[in-house]
Image 1 (cartoon, rainbow, N blue to C red):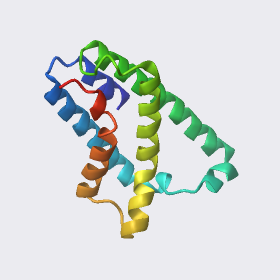
Image 2: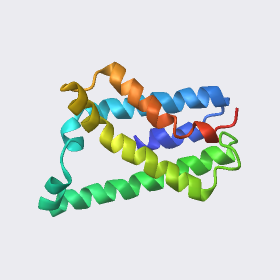
Image 3: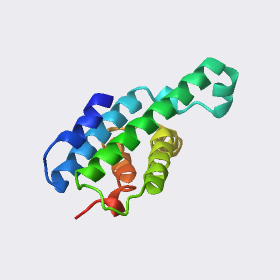
Length: 138
């Protein structure tokens, strides 16, 4: 999945196509997450009880941060993002995206008392993607 995400920045397309590619990849990732929703509905106490699980989660955060910052930088070089999308804003965008992607399933299951369907996956992917819209060149 990491390779596919980074390949987005190598594709020579216009910004509308690039945005659609990002959306498609995000929906695919969120679909996988929905299939393994038990990982995203555990409480922090569970992670604290199992140090190895906590370590894996911490490593996931670190690798995803590196992946997304690399993607952001490539897309900025390619002209997808505005020049104003600074390193600081990229860091904040990453954390916002990670927080949303890490908690949307729990939120959905509490409100709807069921596993997310395809419509819910697309909706929450769009919410996540909206974090980047102010920085995309039009």
